[in-house]
Image 1 (cartoon, rainbow, N blue to C red):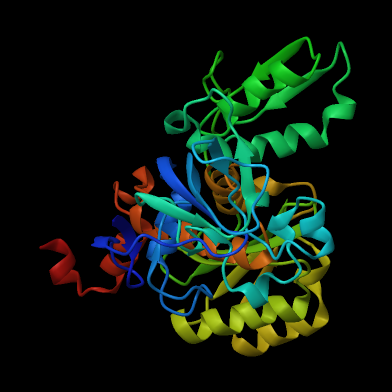
Image 2: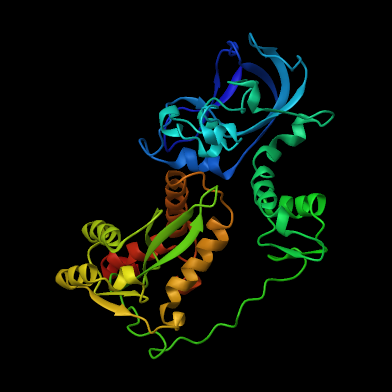
Length: 395
């Protein structure tokens, strides 16, 4: 059969001829009717060897639906020809999280070394797909699998969000859907279908344009120490999100204000001043140190250990005035874009998954996003131009 497989990191997948798998005890062979292409597939292909604990090759595709072709020994309750969707995350099926149908939080995920079909194990971008356990199948009834595949991810993610808030959505309440895109439009339909709310307010151009405050002209008084060259002023700050299950995710961003290059997006459950120091030390070794580093007055940034170390490195610390985030305008603008384009669009299964996605977005931001303030160059292109001799730049 034909299968679209990832055979090497940081290179396109290949359409290959592979044997049709044979189901063992408890397994089910699915004739694929539809397989969705997700942004996560691009993330997986882009990462260097060793970033993900997946063994190559494997077939891509984690949004899958089709018909049962062959039942393995011991499988009951299903018949050949049944239309099914395949649940995306594959855990061990035995730990407490898996028994509660929360396989994204499987306690043995590190041992398994894969997140599911298309994410470390053979997925559905093939003629047939082997599902390791019948518990991962969802009956479709009269629905056509060819149009249902994206529901297993693009609809499942907002469904979890809506379901977790369902007790609060009583008659007369409102729900806010931020970003009516690939997942958001599913959220709107789910809210209408399963909750009694009277009104759904939609942003991001669905019914009304997104209103942004007018830009204020930047002066040296409102933005102290305006950057004049690369490595003149860096800004760093925290932004918060959560992984599936609601556990807090803390993200440290570091940005060169002159070139707009995103130098780092480090995340964890907790990031202390010692952790911040470690991130900066690695950046200093790679990019050199800035003359000034700007931040707010958070405890991690004003800690004696960090400020003393920065002084010893020759980097002056500049803390903005309390209640004046506009003095860190570049950082605020960067966080707004990070929130709109990444954090609001992704569901993180774990801290490790978040690190993979955030690093991919950081690289895309620095190498592909065009900035009008940089002459419509990307931050990476603008930074490279600063390092060239003047004669070459003018040419």
